[in-house]
Image 1: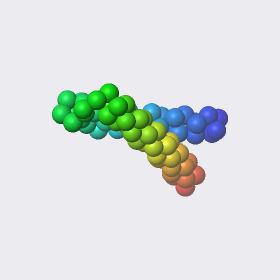
Image 2 (image 1 turned 90 degrees about the vertical axis):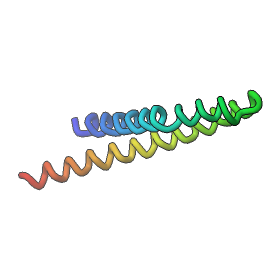
Image 3 (image 1 turned 45 degrees about the vertical axis):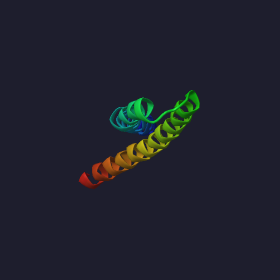
Length: 81
C-alpha cells in the first residue's frame, strides 16, 4: 500500500508542476514569441522543442517533490506513534 501511495504522490507531483509550468509560464511566453518574434516555422518549431524540454524537466522536479512530500508525511506519521 505504501508503494502505491508513493507512486501516486510522485505522479501527482509531476503532473501538477508540469501543468503549472505549462499553463502559467510556457503558454503565455509561447504566444508572445509566436506573435512578436518568430520569423519562420523553424523558429516556432525550435520554441516548441524547447518548451517540451522545459516541461519534461518540470515533470521530473515535480515527481521528486511529490516523493519528498510523501517521505516527509511518512516521517511525521511515524513520529506521532
